[in-house]
Amino acid sequence: MIQSVIESGIIHIFKGKQTIPIKLVIGEILTAEIMDIFSTGNIQIKINNRILNAQTHRDLSLNKGDIIYVKVEKPFPDGTIPLRVLSTSEVQLTKASEGEEISQIIKELPTKIFKFIDSLFTPKQEQNIETEHLNLFKTLLTLPVDNIPEAEKIPLFEKLIEFFSGKYSTSELIKDLVNLLYSKESFKEVAQQMKNMMLLYNFSATTPEKFTVTEEKLKKALLNSGVAFESKLKKVISEAVKPENIREDLKTVLNNIIKEARAHGTEEIVEKAQQILRQIEGFQVLSKMYQSFFTFLPVLWKDIEGGNFAFKSFKRQGKDYYTVFVSLKIKDDESLSFVVTMIKKTFFVSFSGGSEILQFIKNYEAELKERFHDSGMVLGGINYFTKVEELIKHWSIKEGLISVTA
Image: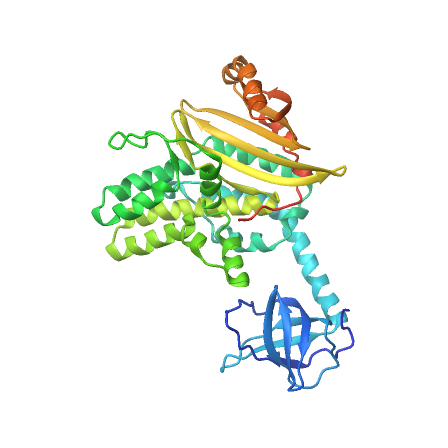
């Protein structure tokens, strides 16, 4: 039960002796579950899915299973972390105040998000990044941005898709960085590591090669694209799992490149790697806002110059939906977007693009149906849209409920 009878304003000290560090933010209000109470006066509490060893400043009328509210205070010089136990009324007042602030922030979010992502996806020489936009990244990931009205979400998403289709793709930036790294003798090893993270076809004139895209390769490339890095990190910390997938993540690799490049005084590499990191942060904000896994498509294949990828799962009228949204950047300033949705093992495919591209796909529609049939998959229907806005509606933004993590 929620413990509501503790006197407010009294400081209780929880001395942590933990095998794995835990990150707490001063001023943050948390719920803590009492897991065990020992005769020595020590207790075990559960915060953020972590079991912590602690002790109280004085005897408390607590029982095993109680849940209390605590506020993180400034640590003492000896490293002890004081957690102030709050009464229910104090929590309600605090949350009401925060609620008003968050409500105001949410009203301003659509405009701020677009400006923020615009700054992240603009090459450095063209940037005009306001400090508040850079600070928004961490703030946005902690706010309930899924509460933004749908009337604001859909037009914002349309703007972002239009914005992405006209910009230099993240995949192309990575290709440029890899080529730059190859030109520097001391960076060739990490260049090969980055190259292995992409799905490339005829990567360069000096290293012609072909590849076969498999489900495993694509999944690994997407999950290592940097967007799921924080989720992976939390998993490593909370579950004490081996951190191999952290070392293989693009965010880790880029940070290592930046560190090494600074040591060598190679500012050109630093700037290119930082630009890619900024774009990854933009995808992280989109993932949070649309309750999805949103990242760049790590593919450079023939006439395809990268693109964007999003996945979400949700329920509607008791049915499970799994939906993928893909936007491809094609040479000669062309683009193609498509949505694939699975409902009870039946697939529905929708395409959006220029009239010539759509006609080309229609010419091969019979082959597409045959490929589905040969794979044992039921194709329920194929739709074509000239406007990406119509396609986005099929992605069911309103219904997205589940975020996908690594």
